[in-house]
Length: 153
Image 1 (cartoon, one colour):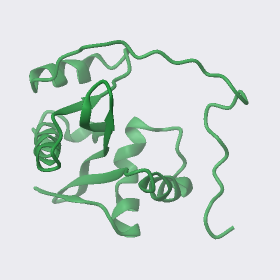
Image 2 (cartoon, one colour):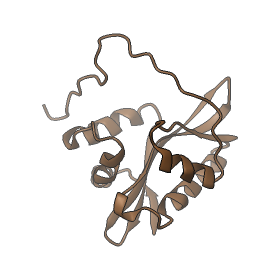
Image 3 (spheres, one colour):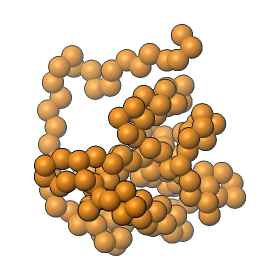
Image 4 (cartoon, one colour):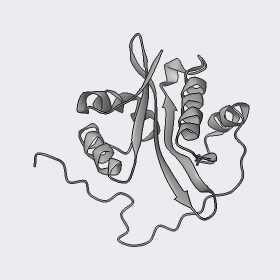
């Protein structure tokens, strides 16, 4: 298994079929633009390459706040359904933990939807602990996702 940062347009686009499992609301034609846009705020995409292509991906960023200091935040972590329970997610999470240490982070954080019970068991098995609830207030324009202005339009 090869784990590496997806940096080229081709590598990022190859991550879409896996990311679609976690983020089905993102259209294929918007994926590259959205990743590139988020990179301006420090977002990075890492993928695990198997013999048949990308089998697992994670999106993350290193940030600081008053509550936790410097930490690595995992925005996305997903493995293709047919590739689950083969250790890929654990290897990718271990890579993220190592990355956090290399970047001087004291902690790794992620949020997970309350309906994702299997994911919660996986996180706990990998040594993560549930420490809080995450609350949301959808205010503003009423749109959950702003219109994406595609490149080349």
